Structure formats: C-alpha cells, structure tokens
Image 1 (cartoon, helix red, strand yellow):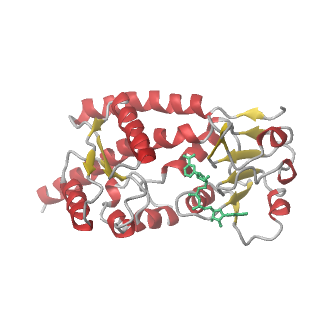
Image 2 (cartoon, protein in one colour):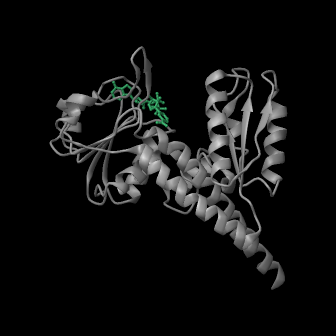
Image 3 (cartoon, rainbow, N blue to C red):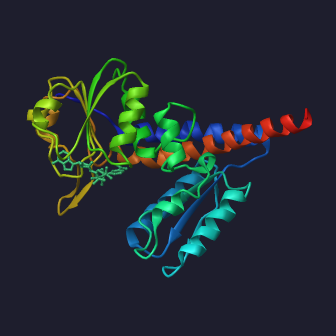
Length: 295
Ligand code: NAD
C-alpha cells in the first residue's frame, strides 16, 4: 500500500480527549453540565447498540446522560410531547431522535420539533438552512467527521477539486456544503451521473457516501488523491466500505479504512455538537438576559 492510512480511531480519540477538557472548562465557568437526550422509540437491536454507544461516550467526556426510551407502540403524539418537553428543559443541551423510528411514526415532523440550538444531528430544516448559508449552527456529525479527518492529515481543502458520491440529506449534501464553505470546488455525483469513474478521476479528494460496496475502484482514483470512504457494509468477512480498499490504496495519496476511518468520527462529532449546543444556549440566554436588563 502506498497511500497514507487515515486513522479515524486515533483522530476520534484525540477529539474526545480535547472535548473532555473543554466540557470540564465550560462546566467550571458556567456551572452548567451539558446534557445529551438520546430518544429511542422501540427496541430495534441496531438502534439500541448505537444509542448505548452514544450514551457511554457522552458520559466518558463529562456530558450528562439524559436518555429517554419510549415503547415500540408509542403514538406520534407521545413522541411529540416528549420532544416538546425536552425542547423546553434547560438541563437538555442536545436532543437526538434515533432513526429509524417504528414504521407507524412519521419521523420528518418529529425531527422538526427539535429547536435548532439543540439539534445535535443537524438534520432539521433550520440547521440545513444555516449550513447552506454558512451561518453558525450545528452541523451533521458524519460530514463534520469527514472534514475533521482531512484537517487532521493536512489534506488541503481550499481550492481542491472534490467529488462527493451520493446526495443524501444525511451525508452527501451536507458534506458537499461543508466543503464548499471551506472553499473547495465540489461536484456532487449520484445514481444518474454519467461516467462516474471519469468524473472521480478529476478529484483531488473523493468522498464516497453511496452505499454500494466496493463501487469506487482504483480506476476512479487520480494518483495521490485523498479517498474518504463513508460507506459501511456488513458481510461474512466483517465490515467493508464503498471503496475497493486494497487496489485504491495503491493509487491514492490518503485513504480511510473501513472499519476505523469515518465511523469512529461520527460519535466524536456528536459529543462536540452537544458541547457546542450548550455553549450556544448559554450565549443566547446571556444575550436575552442583558437585553431585558437594558429594556
Ligand atoms: P443513501 O442511500 O441515503 O444515499 C446514497 C446516495 O448514493 C444517493 O444519493 C444515490 O443517488 C447515490 N447512489 C446510489 N447508487 C449510486 C451509484 N451506482 N453511483 C453513484 N451514486 C449512487 O445513503 P447514505 O445515508 O448517504 O449512506 C451512504 C453510506 O454511508 C451507507 O453505506 C451508510 O451505511 C454509510 N453511512 C455511514 C456513516 C458513518 O458513520 N460512517 C453514517 C451514515 C451513513
């Protein structure tokens, strides 16, 4: 392998260690312990594992675990009531509605009940708009993790030609926006793109968020390019990604493995968002207190 391996586990560990100090400093300065309310409806086994991991990681960096669990047969109204309560609760810095919710529920209007300053997943229309306008707000976790990895390995983003494969709301679109906001020249490709390999060969950075195992072959990769693999596929030989790793690593300059690349960054960025949410709420509350004092 000739590419530099981008070690997501190591970068995520550094992010968490820094965050632990930042959470402690924020709590010492304000008396506020930031808290994350994960909301799980029902008992989907994969969701239970993800939520347990988010809760454990939160506590490890000093965040309060404010987890909420509703039964599988919870009604839309019950979930709405819970989200309203969490939105109004000053002890709750961040709210994360674990997806997917059971099939009888409509996730989209539920997500919209999360106030932008508590939207640690960055999925509400308000957060998406703030990102599109490059205004301060909470950014989606996996896309932010991609940027963090590129920065950690000093891969230049400004002026780079980036090809993002995939246009999902969760990954493709937001990662493209984050890259544009960092002055990259970004091409978003998708299932209708013509000659994807040729488009990818123009890229200094490829971000594969496509959900097709091994789609990105060595033939897609310009010599020396950075290849970031967001895909996760479970198979008999374990986890793999959207990139055909070994051959691509012979051409790329930098490459993320699966597992151990983008995956570990997602929770680390969620924890960072929870602290940022608490900071944002604290500054909004201070601004509103000084506005009423001077009124
Ligand atoms: P998605 O299915 O919502 O979107 C996939 C996108 O890829 C679509 O926009 C589609 O147009 C495009 N696409 C599909 N087939 C294509 C093809 N042949 N050529 C070009 N484009 C094609 O998926 P998603 O939610 O964005 O997730 C993508 C992958 O990332 C999945 O494997 C998912 O498991 C993984 N993922 C990983 C993390 C993480 O933490 N590492 C987080 C989210 C998603």
